[in-house]
Image (cartoon, rainbow, N blue to C red; front, top):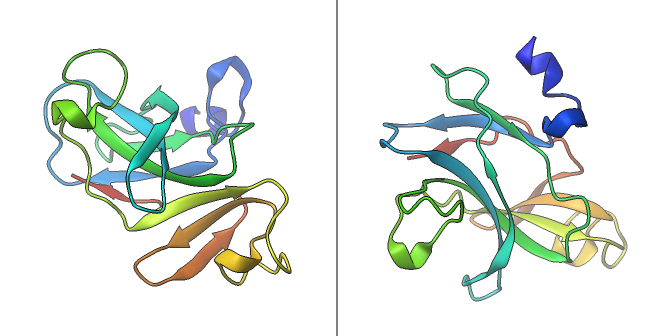
Amino acid sequence: MPLTLASCSTLGIPNADVSGNINGTQPSGKIRLAFRGMTVAGYQAPVADQINIPTFNPEKRAYAVSLPESPANGAYELLAYVDANGNNRYDSADNEVRTASTGKAFIYSKEGTGSKSGTDLMNLKPGWTLYNANELKVEKSGAPFTNYILNW
């Protein structure tokens, strides 16, 4: 039943644009997800959205989240963290414990780029794209993005 409910976006329930598991030894504390903007230099731009992690299966630490509906064009990172100071925001300056970088970015382009073929960063389809920076390739154009694994 909970996974069925996760497919809708009414009553604040995520529509599972991004879903997966958080592997490894979970630290203690309130776990949250952050969806943050990234710059080309790797520095974090202002927060796009930060949400409570909706855990549907506590033993497997499965999650499902909705992507922002009206984001700015750019690259975004999804991470889980321990909200040590309780302000409901990931604070890298406070050294809050977070999942390791995946080497991937969610790229949003309202109009798409180049030929809009989805073959690379110069030719993105309109909407969301999952880009693997380690392998310099587009993994998938268009949500949903399933089996997106985060690791402590």
